[in-house]
Length: 289
Image (cartoon, rainbow, N blue to C red; front, side):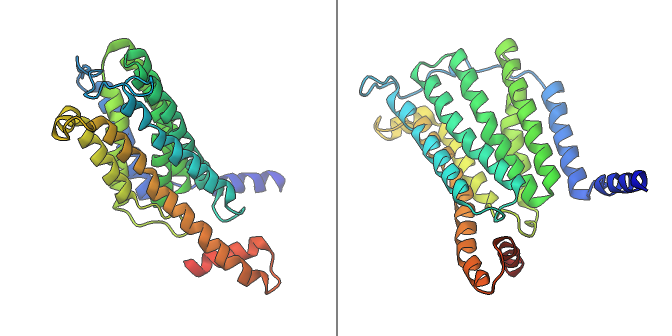
C-alpha cells in the first residue's frame, strides 16, 4: 500500500506540460539554437569609447560610474520591502525570484561601476555576469506570473546557466551572438509573456512598463554620443541608459508595495474574528481574486 501511494503521488506530481509551458519551452529552445547556430557577431571596435570621459571627485568617467548607484538603490529597496512582507503573503517561489532580481541589481551596480571606472574587456566580463542575475529573476517572475510556478523556476535556471556561458564564450571568441540572445532574446520572451493574462494571486508586475523602460534604456545606449552632443555635453546617452535600466525595478517595487499594503489592511479585519494569520492571508487572497 505504501508503494502504491508513492507511485500515485509521483504520478500526480508529474503533470503534463500545459500549452503555455510547451510554447515557452519551444521558444527557449529556439533561442538556444540561435545562440549556438546563429551568425558570428563581433564586438564593436569602439565598445569602450563612451562619450562622457569627465572625471569628478577623482572618479574617472564619473557620471557613467555614479549613475550605477540607482541600480544599488533599487536593489536594496526591493530587498528591504521583501524582508518586511509577512509570511504567506507572497509564495516562496515569487519571493525567491524577486530576491534574485533585486540582489542582481546590487551585483549589477558593482560590476558596472568597476567596468566604467576603467573600461576594458576584463571589466566588461564582470559587468555582464552581474547583469545575468536580474535577467534571470525578471524572466522567472514573468513566467511564474503568466504561465506557472515551474515555468518560472525553469526560466530562471535557464538564464542562470546560459548567461555565464554566453559571457565566457564572448570573452574567449569575441562572438557576441550568444550574449545578445540572452539579453535581447530574453526580453522578447518577456514581451510575449506580457500578452498572456496574469495568473490568479501572482505578483502583479506590470511587464509592459518593464519592457518600456528597457527599450528606452537601449535607445539611449545606442545614442550615447548623440545625446552627449545634443545636451551640450551635460549628460551622455549611456548615463541616461543606466537611469532607465534601473527604473525597470520600479514596476516590481510597486507590485510588492501594493501587496504589502493589501495584506496590512486585510489581516487585522480577519484577526478580529479569531482566525490565525495564515488563514487571514488565505481569506485576503480569495477576496482579491
